Length: 371
Ligand code: GLU
Image (cartoon, rainbow, N blue to C red):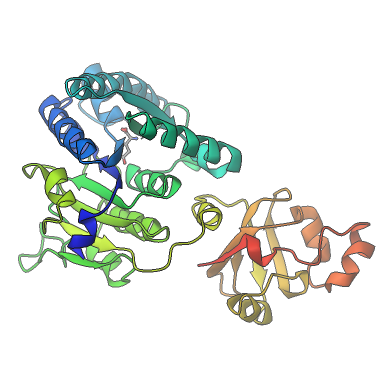
């Protein structure tokens, strides 16, 4: 599969906090310069690159002289605001040495959950790429709270890859890739060179979360690969401490772990539906409705036994079986209060119950994605 990486054109490169800040010691300008040089070369070879860079909080902490990561949200948000200035400065000057402009993009989960803002972000990013600019993305840490966070930049990297239909997502980290077990604890752990992004055995191999500096760990990287695979994007996880990892990975060299996407990519609107991280409502389906959905039908009110949450018409909701397992998600045609009134009824009763009918389906199959 490595040879397919050679022909990839559009790449998202995600670099983690530990690399960007030299394990929290301060911005690693040499490393940043190295990525800029490699990306400049990849651009010359006709590739388009978007960077997702962590490190704002870690760099801010260092600038403010804090040795320990604070736990209060406000302190973290303040550190991110300070650190983001340093990050932007460092990237801008490193890329300008290669004649490349950079653009700073700070995103929140809401930006991607709202269809219009999602499409706006997409067209801005593609315009920047056409202009030959290297967009540098981070989460807008200063305004997000726990409930509305992407959570970690591995997830953000995957969502950005889906947003711009990237061919590959490269995650540079401080480990060599995915191992069969945690290499810090198990001497028999071996590096997995390549595999299917959706192979269920990987999650168990990935172990716990990352170091004190980074938010994610190997597990968030595997989940990011699964997400990216849904839009046909391959994921590469490799050590950012190797020599020229970006050039070598792009050349198809066997470095780190390649988690390839083999399923047919979802249409982009369905991809957007699946990529919602927080859903305002849950529908519980009876066994008949579960079967109908799996056979490709729409969701009718008669097959729904419970509606949880508060949401308006057009919200993206989870569809669960009676054991609470989410099997699909979709855009619902009725608000929560009305959905509660029509469930367990057949569709021809909707008009009598509500005084109008938006359509016979609670969720039309065109707005539904099976997971
Ligand atoms: N957005 C955070 C930062 O820039 C990092 C999140 C992460 O490490 O995944 O500091």
